[in-house]
Image (cartoon, rainbow, N blue to C red; front, top):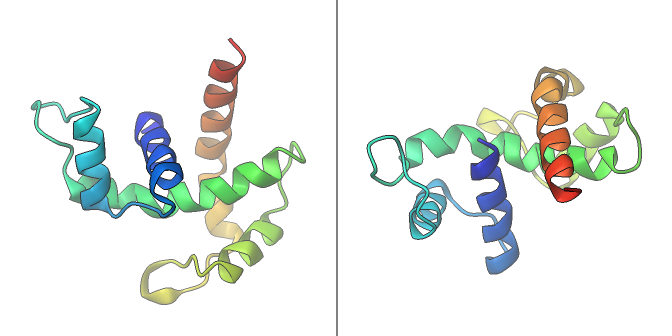
Length: 116
């Protein structure tokens, strides 16, 4: 999933906007990142990651400042940027807490690679 995140972030940098699942699938395929079958990663597989990727980006901004990112600040920033859950429900600190272990693991993995 971290490879998908890195490609998502790279696409965002290259194109100035976040990719839709279909665009990310094609972007991954162009970089020889395919599914187990050797075919492009299914957009339906990628779709489940798009919201956590968006939230992780805000979490990581706060993580750069503090070892314990303020979840309420991240939730407020999500609301300010229009990042919502299904049916436009606001994201809560509880949702971010649920993602916390994965976010911290990704943070450590990406930052340990950057420093090697």
